Image 1 (spheres, rainbow, N blue to C red):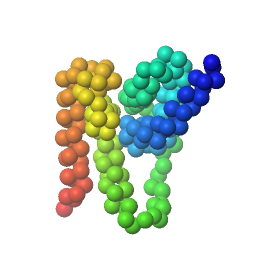
Image 2: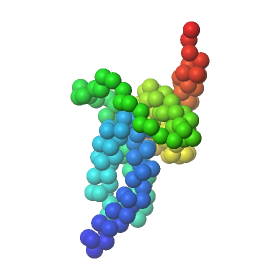
Image 3: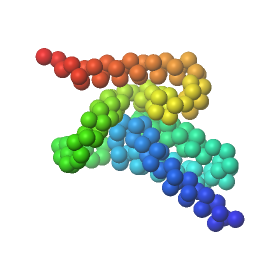
Length: 168
């Protein structure tokens, strides 16, 4: 019995790792290392809850844990290593460059949002959750989630417009 639960968990993680990691990156403002740590923490919690959650909605459980852990970790100040120079770009395909540049620009702007606004925008527009579910994940009333999303999107538009139109 225990082996089949382990196999189910392994299959779930293998199938959903990429999407969950991308969600974690968005929630952490594009920080790959924090996203890996966040996802690992969420999957450990899922492992312990697996007997209870596996038949219902394990992905919803992980999304909730990720959003809450990202908001909680945002409140803690990290004094660890800080890179001083950006890493050099890797050579790649010129065709994919525009899409990658646009996604990078969006992720950079998303990283500038406060944690709760960033979580609200990611839950609503990346995860495509209805307002009620996003509010449930954020542990706030629907009106607050709606307000966080609206303000976050407005700020993103402002940041992206400023990046396109540099100040002279």
